[in-house]
Image 1 (tube, one colour):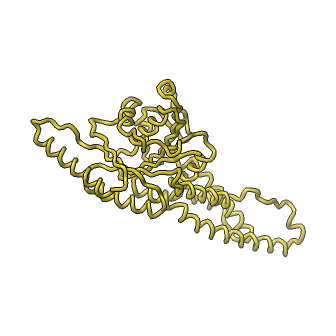
Image 2 (spheres, rainbow, N blue to C red):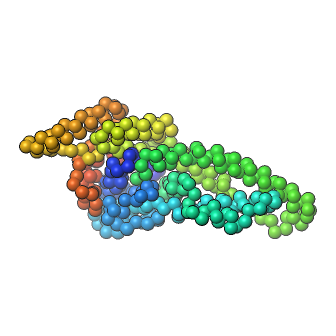
Image 3 (cartoon, rainbow, N blue to C red):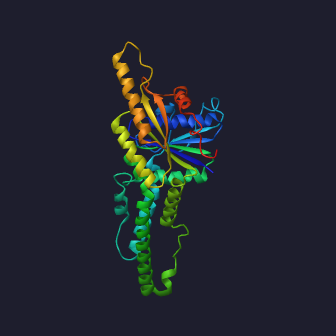
Length: 327
């Protein structure tokens, strides 16, 4: 069974670094790992210093450095856009069969401005199911978009479920009207050339969303890890995120406090003051989240890029808890 680890939090707190570091740590332990960026503003390729595309690819050159294989992908919603276009086309065909005109040009116009709203989240859910149910990885690590996008990702199966159920009901009614009209006009001849769609796009899509919701809510295999920085606004946002995720049945077990100022020099009063403030914030986080494992990462000069730099973060994140469940 494939385990899933999600990293999320406020923008700019270091989610990508944590996701990449965890993936490297797992691969170092001989675990077949895929790390996925669902953030439209991808930075995973920069963190790992490799070129990534919309299809999972094994990181060439890393295999000699790791015990297991490490794969990575940056989800592009356009790679799943055709799925939504097929659904719209199928609906348009049913409407036409009932005498309601909707031309191919009008269907195309729906997508003229790019992928529809919510496509990033829908594509991420669709691919979550594919990676877990059809992939060969032991663990899939997700680097999610900032908090708002992440919450939409987890809410999407429930929100879309009702909409799709309603659409399928209307679609069935339209089909019956169209079939009755053709039968009344042409009799038995109306069935000539008719074919049954063996794979209902809407039913299949709804099934995949339901499966995604099942995976997200499976507390035995799926875990969400919050990333924050030692600032009050970030702490408050993290508190809201944890509360909303738990209300949705998502397991949240740890929180990473990134960019903590450590080891101030004795002759720098400003450094000492900053160190004290960060130490107080970390303690505030421990008091705010007494049931979470709190891990800290040091503040660093510049970006964390490349295998060795990210691996140094992995060493700090390594603990019994940071291993995947049941692996």
